[in-house]
Image (cartoon, rainbow, N blue to C red; front, top):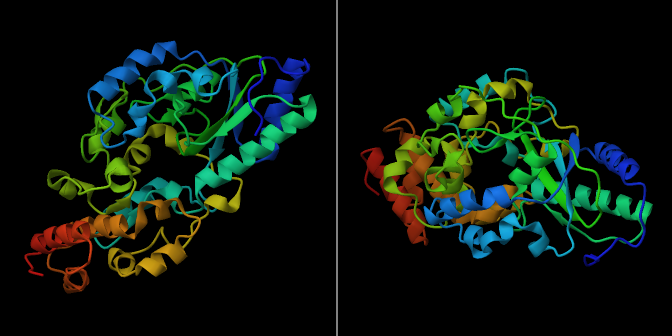
Length: 367
């Protein structure tokens, strides 16, 4: 990938190029493409306060780059603009009452609830590939230029940049919200050294609504725009490498990978859009799987079935940890659940054994 240059080798018709970039993005499956400058000075104090409070938990990478996260030109010298792109991820066949259906699964003590975004192909690969294609289309139009493609893969403040670009606003749950698409989408970006015309940011439209704050099972949303990741179920089931704090386990319920509660409660998600690409369609029956079924997967089966899935990155050990918590929260005394847990009671991993023992105790059963 070419290094950033001090000046683009040619000076194209920048307004026309910006319009072309948006059209090319649509052809590649992006629902919206916008352009912003890279000034995030107003984000630095909030970022530092969040880090100082330890709200990032064990995500040391959030702090390791310091304020470089808010300074794209320090990360990629020569950057003057960001091309920010949105790709919707609801599976193509999603029913109109999808939010009600998801709530019913959460209420089923036997169900294993996987966040909707993670039931298909790994979004990192999908977006990165298509953003790279978009970057190459730009090169075909202007010649060599400096750029870097990112999809949740580097110390870049993606959401503030997307907000500046006009893709949406930061909801009270801290996710990006769009009036046209709710929050069920991924974002990625291309940092470029082309001084493209920028789009206007959009205002916030949450009003007095506090549905996302009220519904959070663990109270991770401390207030509008204030998230303590250490209590967030997505963090606990994906990012946390060690034991899930015991005081939070019962609150997790049957959510074994990620959490959609704040999105299910958000009124704006009545406008959520289906994906136009098949990559995010459900695989391995993860939208209807049971806790006992998934807990029975061997490590080989886990790796084989979840090839190309974002879930695979947590590994089989944490997969079993999460499922053990779900089984501990399932219907008390269920013989099938107790038997499944006992089958893992002597697992080689101390992490798995700890969570299995906790789950068995919840059922009043011994290993």
